[in-house]
Amino acid sequence: MFVYDEQLTTMILDYCRWRLALDPVPLDFGGAQASSLAASLGGLINHEGTDPRRVMDVFDGELATAVVSCDSPRFLSFIPAAPTKASLLFDMVVACSSLQGTSWLEAAGAVAAENQALGVLADLAGLPRGAGGCFVSGGSAGNLSALMVARDTATHRMGDRSPHRPLMAVSEEAHSSVGKALRVLGVEALLVPCEDHRLTGAGLQSALESQARGADVIAVVATAGTTNAGIIDDLDGVGQIARQRSLWFHVDGAYGCAALFAPSVRDRFAGIEMADSFVVDPHKWLFAPFDCAVLVYREAQSGQGRPHPGRLLPRRTPQRRPGRVESQRLRLPPDEAGSWPTALVLTGSQRHGRLSRRIRNRARRYPAVGRSHRTLALSRAGASARIVGCPVPSDRVASG
Ligand SMILES: Cc1ncc(COP(=O)(O)O)c(C=O)c1O
Image 1 (cartoon, rainbow, N blue to C red):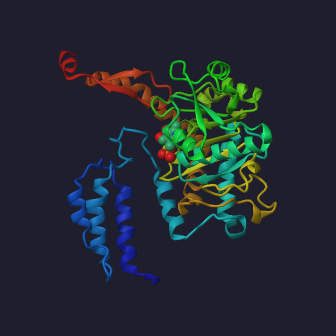
Image 2: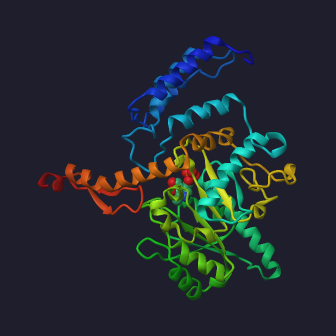
Image 3: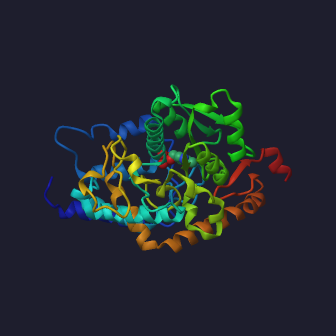
């Protein structure tokens, strides 16, 4: 088991080479019958162990084909992943190297690479020196971590004046993970109505002033790239109100903050430099494989010492108290430690920007394609890479 096996290695590497070279990647089908999957899996876990060829056959023939391939060009639902071949390959390299990124003491190489990638994002957002963060498993974990730090920071800062039942201001367009995070944290939501699906500074101010418990709000969550339509909230307006009222300002950019790499749309993110924390998922629109999210804090120190799904890395100062920078780890997929930072190095930040511009341009052209097929109607002009359409009823398709 722990001895190098040439045959097994060749079989696996051949499979990986074949999968990487697929062009186009087939869509496959995620809705297989539970009974047929159960039959394929039956007996695989047994006392003696199973022949690797049989395992590979089941994986390739039954399991992999029962998962929609997010990297297929035919997959347009939800928020697809589009990993580059380089990032997939480096996922393998990182896995084969048994890397972990626990702390500077044990993993300085991985931590330094992560710090560099965190630094690139913090700089793109315009955060000051002292910003830093960590890699976590996804936007949901990032939102939860950031909002926990927001809650604890407010409690610490306000002391006896802390509201008994704190609230955080969110919009109805916030991702479902934000609502779930609040429930986990025992914090209630103050729902701020949107203007044309957008959270604005004026909307926030009016909600804080008009709603009965507005004074108990300790933080506000804005979205940079809503899940449904890719809309970027009024970060500048919201950030200013947050500053005036000493609210923690979190930006959920799980999907949209990838466009920070594109100078052509950088102005849409004006105000993000006021954020106390923001999250971005390289597995969404930064061409990394699942699972990978980056959580950046304005002050790396703010998250220190709290339970945290990941380590907290003070950017640029890893040498200072190197053994003390990580906080308690809840979950850390080993591949976070290398594949996205490596992919970024290989692709280059300018090309990241160009790639996202190309995708946005394609999204803009899509309405024309949809119209020409007469099957899709555009619900909203593309604010980013999202195409928001709805099926045209079949009688209207026919009459054209
Ligand atoms: C705006 C936004 N935030 C958070 C998430 C959750 O991200 P993850 O699936 O990586 O946990 C998503 C997922 O689509 C999202 O669109």
